[in-house]
Image (cartoon, rainbow, N blue to C red; front, side, top):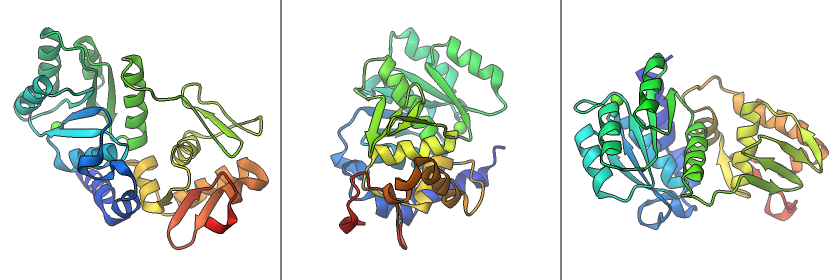
Length: 264
Ligand code: CA
């Protein structure tokens, strides 16, 4: 499954014009405005590091990047990171060694380790060394984001709510329950992720490219996958589905829970 070209394509989508232009209105989109918790990314593959940097800043996190283990270890000691995303395979000092040293020094900063899909025994070792969670490559950004919020919540570091609502929809990110006007909805994981993203960012217009990047990430599957999933979510939302989950012609999609025709 792992293949460098897929990563590169996904990273290019991540830093390409589609994502950047839709992201600009958001406060976390570029540098100095970000004021959320700091995430330290220790990752030697630049395309992945960039993919994470763009996505995390968009979510309002401050981001530091270290592209080798020693720099990572130094930044982990010097900076006030709320969370560390740690790649396992690094050129000098590997992820296990970094994790072990940080824990030996008494650091309690939560660590999410990135491992290759095949390295299942490695996950166990990582968790034994004090990592809080692990994610196997390739992963989608939303998957990582969910882990980040969960880990930060466990560490009491983020006031992230688990209950999202809008337009009569309630979505609980913890129990994975979704209801619309009191009726329970059965959504597939991708439909759930789509609706969660829209509920987190009402009125924002997401391009198809951004949705592909955010929801499907490195598991990129096909050309009309976004359209098909939007259509399914609309159907499940019933008669008001199309109204709430607007097509913004020539641009993308936007969640308009307040039914305001004039701003469509
Ligand atoms: Ca690596």
